[in-house]
Length: 458
Image (cartoon, rainbow, N blue to C red):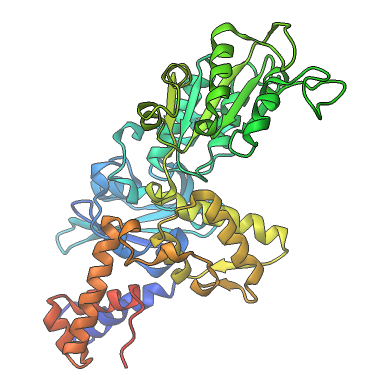
């Protein structure tokens, strides 16, 4: 290795970042304190998250058993080892190499992944970004949950906590209320709870209370007898509740039930039998009820729009499903999952550009997972090349970072930072050296931010 006083050292140092960025394999380096001090472009491309969001994170805070830290402690390299990585929640193949000073002391560790099929970074986001998340998830992993929950994709701590609670209550007979915004996957949770329960071999019947006209919802739920009203079938009709006998009844958008239907549903939950419209036979029903809503039922109760007694009967086990903007680690996972699905569906071979992944990461996702799925399908369909870029992403007007209704702290900081850099460039008449001096940052950080914010200098 060249000594640092060699006249060529500064040339090598200057181009080292560019050289490492040429590798497709991800590279990550931590210092002797365990803080991440470098990731290459291959790492960014593989995990779908920018280095600015990763640099400075300390592995010791949450992942003390990480292989990078093991090499830091022992000073011994680990070469091409396949192992279960606790920070990722699956197996990877990687090498971990100690970097030592002239005295033989380990001052840093470099981790180099492989793009073999075992290494799943191309479809996962690094959980390093989850340090600020709920501590309850420290010991949780996807492998802890029944296979019934495999259809719910993600690794974010908030999601794992939600899955953990769902798995616990699935075996009980308790009534569950799923809370969350539109598009977070409430029906997927309801089905998973049913499939994991002792009722799994019996019917799962889903009813969207908001999709059925008010004058028909009672007959849909409770059924009716022959000739019960004008237009009724001559044979009568079995209601959804009766169809779910011995199984699970899933009432989505429960907050949209009319007051009269709320009364009848309350009576059913109390007495465990129903009467069809137009009839007087009391039909005993054994059913577990799972409800879901994106509305503020507590406020509706206060305002008299939802019955308090029904609310307390349905809200026995509330499960709050986090929105996608609180599951940043899962955006890349879900994006690649849907990309794989739609590229197979449309027989295409397409990948994401780094800029596209940055757009997905920065977007607010008001429509959550449903919106992400639709956007990826749209991008796959209209993309004529082999790379999806930001122009292929049909993001709504909510993507405008200036809109205060969709700002979070990180996005606000980024917007301000970009504006300051542009102002410094203008003041310096686009002289980069002067702009760097105005900003008071290193040249490397300056160029990284130009790349991050896609700023061009005329």
